[in-house]
Image (cartoon, rainbow, N blue to C red):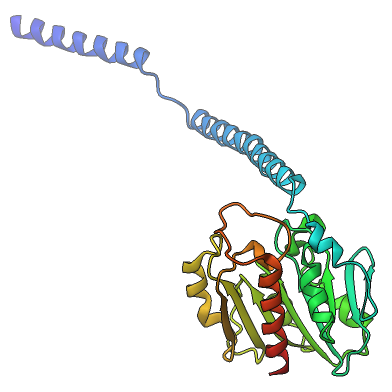
Length: 283
């Protein structure tokens, strides 16, 4: 009887424990699990829908501030070069600044893309120098002073001057990058001049002629990236480093943050640049 009583007590205790366990931890129906999963997924999607617009708004805001931020204005020296003379006429169409020589015996034209956040007028001295040597020179104005927003600006220039037989293009810094991209897709362009710049796509087999002008005291040019880009230049590229010049010296817009100190004037540097461009074109 004692054994039976013990067995009965154990069974009762076991049953009681099972009942308590059942009430303490009821099984969760499969449909409730699925409902919870759907709820979590919905919340995650809701958070993503809130986060993405917020991130986009921040990016757009930063870009907007950058686009409206002050740029490098042309100096008085550059603006003086906008005045016409007997040998060069100057026309500002609103989208381009055209320097037309009184004589252009070789029928040559040169399109120029300004550097990032630099007034187009800042390159008037350079463009005028080419025009005085018999080259039609056209500076393309850029929206927000960034050539990336008008990389095909040269197209309308070429179409407006059917009298030109030989076209070249060039640019300073970002302008040079964008100019080279255009040159690669327009067979009317014979060559591209890089001023403190380099190509961002492979032009080694493009058949284009090229000139790379750098300045010894340029403190902004990333020399490491420039060296890495050397294989991208056209095969017969002419390289010339202007002693004593700096990055800002390729235009006339004053000092630039991070740039080195020049030991020659911007006018002297641009005179050298004009001479090298002319020698390259006629070479």
